[in-house]
Length: 328
Image (tube, rainbow, N blue to C red):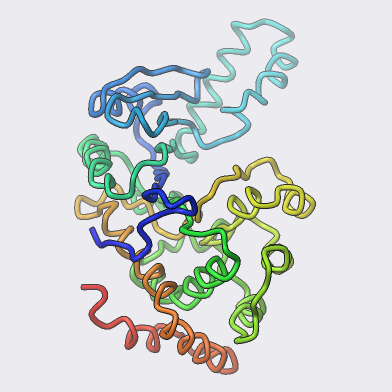
């Protein structure tokens, strides 16, 4: 597992990261008990589709959440419809709900959301990844219908707009390289969940005189990206910093404000025995290294502006020369 040049968060404390895994093949109960079997603790079931697990090993970080990744079911929105459909007969409503849930399991993933743990403790989450693999869960490549992802939520090292801008620049610079490294599944490209940043937005933030305050940075982002569906979703961070400004543009009730980057590009290739969380983290770290290397970042942004004038050419060949030796 490679180290980031950014050790502390915006408060000067050791950085933490949450991890989200989407997969299928196990029930809510089986997943929840797998977590307690590894880390101890107690399970609280919040309906049929969601549980919270307070573990002993990660007691300082908060609970794990396990849920069926379908808001209509897990948020209880289905109950009103079923009550009308069954004419108030609860036993009939329950049977209908079970049939719908069983059918949903075929194409809607289960999701594990870890608490924000110290980044240095990521190897301890590999125990969970390994346990799920041994139970033959299905990941992104198990079916052409599985648009399942792994999401990493590392804390931002700073709230300074210039630093946030540099992370956005670094990510866009690295996008082609990351897409190659992750070997992003075709099914996930077909869905809108990880649509790349528009070239028009890239052209704005790569300008050498682009030194926005946080208001301009947020407004520019929302102007070109009024959606959660970006490979690096910045809405959780911008919502934390200025919720009213963000919700005027994007108010779908799905964004949770938090001081993190929401990195959504990787597959959840959990059915592959060679796949690890550390591998995906190592890819992300290259973005952090570019963001921290200010001279290199400046040279690359200039090269990228030239690249934008030559449609059809990929930037990965330029990037590869600059990060030679960083990733083996």
